[in-house]
Image (tube, rainbow, N blue to C red; front, side, top):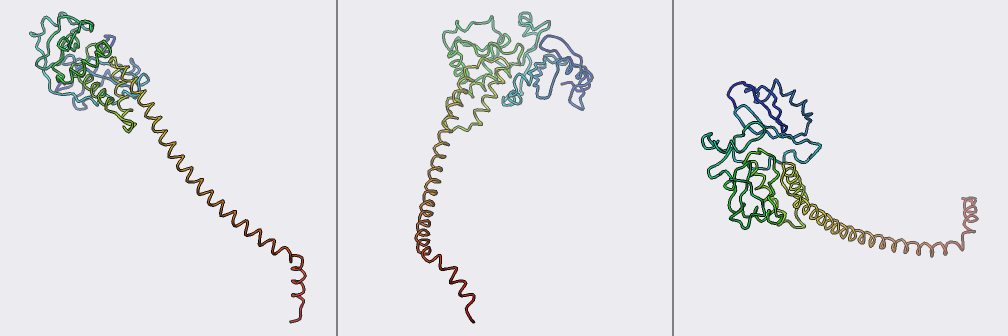
Length: 297
């Protein structure tokens, strides 16, 4: 970011530019930010992704809270490496002529090994893992992922016969895209390894994260569908165990009540015998009582 106060351009997803002022001391935007916020009807809970495409220009992606409440904070799960280097204009002289977003070219944050793709590839053309390239903004970002993760991602894509990242937001930072893919693989592995005893909170976290990635364009509906099925089975299994425990408790309570009822029946029988014995002289009790009160001292 600039070392002194300067004007920053915000470009929204429609390609419209907004002038704002960046304040170094506050590390924030002013003098134009309110206009941008009003124009896009920003509300508390909305999530914005700022991609620095030029030294004084951000591409801004907006995810509305009412479209996906769970997205808030999900991107924070991505362990993105802050270390990066910018490809020089000399190395990208041909690339920037071929890859355009709106009216301007985006710079790319890349690591050694990332290369330009000659053309887009249809997944049907991928015959084996050696043909599998992960293409983001015209760049093959395979080096951003380990061979192990690449292999796992290849298997996921094969299961759906498509590149799961094919519809990711245009111009998305390569590291962010790689982080989304890596976390998708991790969650897929976690789903595979889950058990009925897996805490429900884990399912909720995975679901929130996947829904956030889906909003960014990842084709992962099949993972969400599987999660819904697993959550349903886990809930039924939990309820089954709860019902068994409730029945055990109910039976124990019933045995306690039956024991108490037996005790009450015994008391009732004893009192019946005593009442029968006393009833024979019941009429004489009043007379004897009166006689005793009037008897001489």
